Structures are given as C-alpha cells and as structure tokens.
Image (cartoon, rainbow, N blue to C red; front, side, top):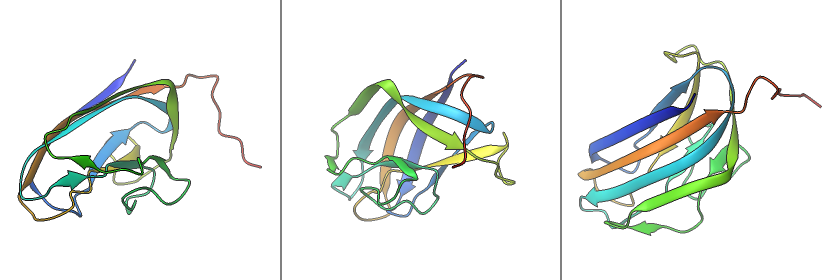
Length: 133
C-alpha cells in the first residue's frame, strides 16, 4: 500500500505548512513532485520533515528531504527515490490518521503563490522497527 498526497496550494506564503497525516510507523519517501506555478515569488526550497518548523534547506536530523538549492518558478521537481528516504512517523494527537509529517514549500516571497504536487510514501513493512539506543 502507498500513501499519495495530491497537493494544490493557492495564495500561499513563505510560512505555509502542509500536514501529511499517516498512521504511526516507518515510511519511505518514494516520490516527490512539485511545481511552483504562479505568484510573486521567484523560487522554492521545499522540505519534508518530522518537524513542523523545518527551515528552508533543512537544518537537523528531522529534515529528511531538504535540498540545499532553490528551484525556480515553473521548473518542475520530479524525483523518484530508490532507495526511499526513511521517515519515522510518531504519534500526533491532532492527526486524522495518528501520525504526522510536514511539507513546507518555502516560497521565497509574497503571499500569492500557487503550486501543485504529489508526494508518495510507502510503508517500510512490519519488519521495520524503531530501535532506541
């Protein structure tokens, strides 16, 4: 089973955060696609994180997908990950499915930015377990 998030953003700003609700467990990010379609901004620097406040370009171990470079408006990002990027989805009381990750496109300017995307996660399976050390 895969979890695919179809994202449509309209009139968003630099602080926009999209909740990605998943059941608690281990997942692999297998596909990330996004295009900044219109708006006054010029670039994005997307982050998918276990942390709601993930900065552009990442910054800590919770920022699993955080390219260092920006992407220009109207330049599609279409990345298939093999192997997938692992994420540990922990319990979140506000989540409709029990756990939550966060996607932040990090538009560089203004509050009239639009974009569309697709983010796909695959469970890493019942054999995967989080071990504390």
